[in-house]
Image (cartoon, rainbow, N blue to C red):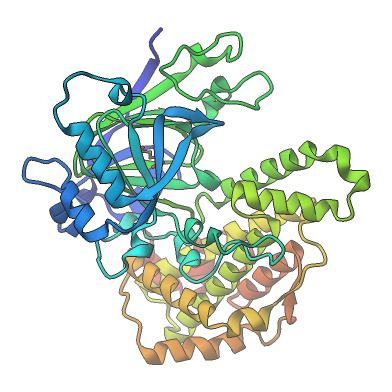
Length: 489
Ligand SMILES: O=C(O)CCC(=O)C(=O)O
């Protein structure tokens, strides 16, 4: 029985879409879209593609052949994913070339069961000097990768392993595989957004909106369908046949935006190379917390029977959560606290640089306050779970850290790009340092819980006469009544 296709994903010219329109129509609405015209001048589109539009496999062997990568065997399932192998890029390319060469007959090895798909290659981390592409402006407000460029997400000394170093280093990937390779049905890591750009080839995507996702789960909401094109058991997945799918074909030079929590299955219908990032920001960070809480409850339930004999049951749950989900409560709180400080600092700096909060500054200020409010909303939810009580994060340690200063600089650059000018001078950087003291001088020295995080944000916003949760428009007009007339988007 075929899938019920409800809709085709719309395709629009990305160059005709400004940042605010993208936010309103796609990030906030959490809707998929295909964007064209955003990959012009990418080096990858020249170096990695032959004139006939096929991947330049030789180029990869010659320039990146020694990289060790993860390759999925698309014919073998392992738990909820495909079996992964590790090999050199040169070995992967050799197998791909063999697959293309004329053969006497389709033997076992090539009958489609052992198609290999290179996935999750941290290309930018490995080749930072190469500059394969520029992240399009629409996807720049990326807290996940901005943070991972400066910090490790999970740093608990008890469970931190150096071997995790590369695999957790960022969420910027290259994927490449021959026609027929595919990715099973899934929703993305941390329930983040993702974007995926086709450097060459063609992909077919099948999407299921979050409101329908129960239809691809079993009765206990434990296991989901692996392959929507195999014979899905009606007994095991009774809702599956009711699911309404969105479908699209992504051509060369198209970028697809994948919203949070949408399940999707992807097929390479030609030999394809793509670049993709996972990311989150103020518009979807609540999805991250919701997933973390759900996974935590599951991790707890799984080992409930050893609770009585376990010295540190909570610690074990948190270690399991970090191992399975990629972060635990402590990691997430650290992340949020650092972002809260960074946003407060930027806000303070803006106010200091320009007392009148000119129009473009106001837009950035608007964004920063929105960020803080979204962090605060999650911190409020965390309070009820009593996350990480007893933990202490020394604010002076956070802000004195060189990585924090770099994070602030990256955030300033990012919002400069999305909302206004982005030059940052050495003098400005130094001013940021001294602003830090001014911002924090009256706040207690440590943030030990989500409750403290709420207090910190309230304290910081109060410095600008803003009450958390208050409508930004009234704040702007109080700051500068004349500007109000011309500043609205
Ligand atoms: O291209 C693929 O095979 C999968 C990509 C994907 O699932 C994603 O970008 O979220």
